[in-house]
Image 1 (cartoon, one colour):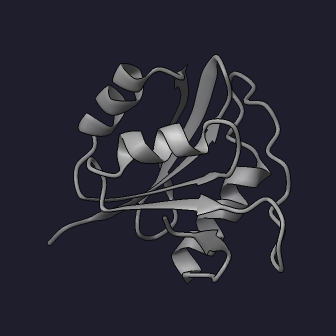
Image 2 (cartoon, rainbow, N blue to C red):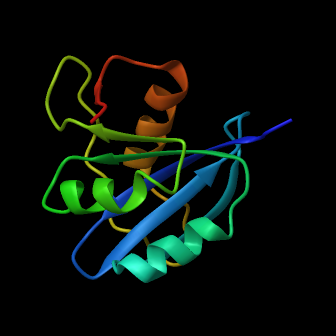
Length: 119
């Protein structure tokens, strides 16, 4: 049986905040890594199962989509506007869980909400 992992990414120029939830919605891993192709792929290589990634549209969206599409089961890019707006993510603070923005993305991803732009 394959376990599903939902991976939310908040991508910025220097760093990417990542949270991984299992099929029950429990956070099983979170952290901040460099926004570099090899670092992101190395992170994903350490995960097993059915990997589903979600992140917001932005400057890095096309690059990240192209990087990830052959390494995961599904890549969803969230529009920043629409019927179901997602609150802005706040910056990751050491020792604190990833903020509300990623939690909202996970909930919509798990529901299969029609908010995502599947490329």
